[in-house]
Amino acid sequence: MHELGIVFYIIRDVKQAAAENGVQKVTAVVMNIGEVSTIVPEYLTDCWRWAADREELLAGSELRINTIPAVTHCDACGKEYATVANGKTCPHCGSGETWLLRGNEVEIKEIVVPD
Image (cartoon, rainbow, N blue to C red; front, side, top):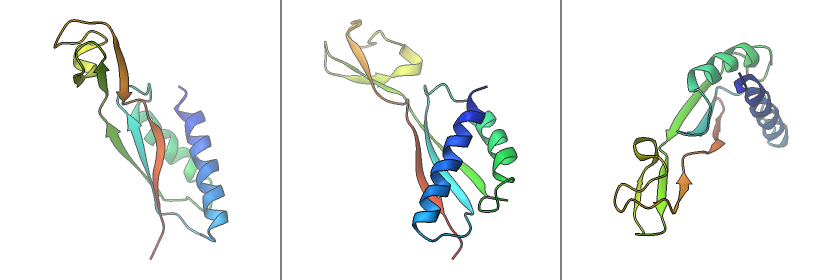
């Protein structure tokens, strides 16, 4: 389970951003997680709860996950298609000359602080 390691990196980055901005408390962290990023959102959330509650800055904070759909581009026909449903072969022309446009992101989108 690599999700715990990812949570440690998220916490490190949030703590750094909080220190740079004089933030004393974080209520939520919003993540963009790609559909084919190899991260299991439920595991990430479970690991977050365990690790965040050990940090005063993050205790009780929520981890919100936005799932970014995986989309592939076909160089042969120029069309885009849903990656998970079709894999590397373009459903429009049958070409394998394809590449992933989006869907493997792992990024902090927003850090939510109290009013």
